[in-house]
Image 1 (cartoon, rainbow, N blue to C red):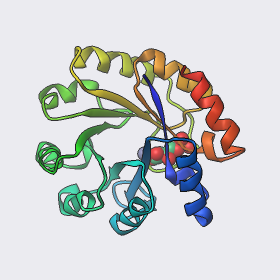
Image 2 (tube, rainbow, N blue to C red; image 1 turned 30 degrees about the vertical axis):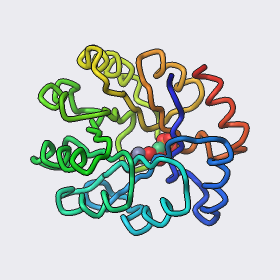
Image 3 (cartoon, rainbow, N blue to C red; image 1 turned 90 degrees about the vertical axis):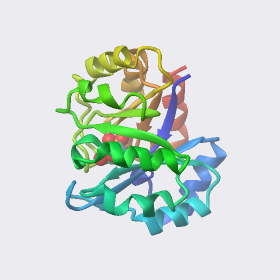
Image 4 (cartoon, protein in one colour; image 1 turned 45 degrees about the vertical axis):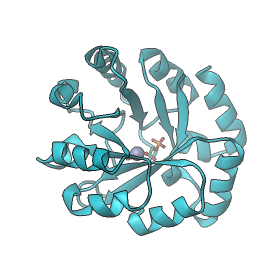
Length: 214
Ligand code: DX5
Ligand code: ZN
C-alpha cells in the first residue's frame, strides 16, 4: 500500500505545532523532514536540534532527508534526534556505505537518495544495506518545482533492480494528486508531498492526495 508522507518544510512554520497536530489528527504515520545545510543545497533548514524538538512533540515516525555536505560529520547528531528513517544522498559523500551502516547499526531504516541525474544502477552494491531508495523527482533544495517526468522511468527501473527485495521506493518533489497516482502506478511506496498538501486547504488537499492513490 502506497502512502503520503507530508514534508514539514512545506508547512506554515509560524504554526508548526498546529501543523503537527493536524497531521497527527489525520493519522499520518511518517513525517518527512528535510535537513539542508546551505552547501550541498543552497537552502538551509531544520538542524538536528529542531528535528529533535519536533520529534519530542510528535508521535509520528520521522523520515529525515539529509541534504548535507560531509554527512559523516553530522550523522551521529541526526541519529540522536530519534528519527526512525534516515536517508543520505549518494552524491554527497564518497563514504555512503559507511553512513548507511551507521544508520543500520543504530537500528534505524536506512535510505539512499538519488538526484535526477544519478543513475539507478548506483544502488547495485548497496542493495543489502538499504531499506529504501528515495528518488528525487525535482532537484533538491527548493520547494515549488515542477515534477521531472523522466522520473517515472527511473521508478520503474529501480523497481526492477530491487527484484522483490524488501526495499521501498520513495519519491520527493513536485508531487500533486495527479502525479501521486502516476508515481504509485510506476512503483512508488512512499510519496512525499509539500506544497500540494499545505499551500491551500490542507484538509481537502490531503483527502484528495490519499484518494488518488487508493
Ligand atoms: C525539496 C525537499 C522536499 C520538499 C518538497 O528539496 O526535499 O521534501 O519539501 O516540496 P514539494 O512537494 O512542494 O515539491
Ligand atoms: Zn525531502
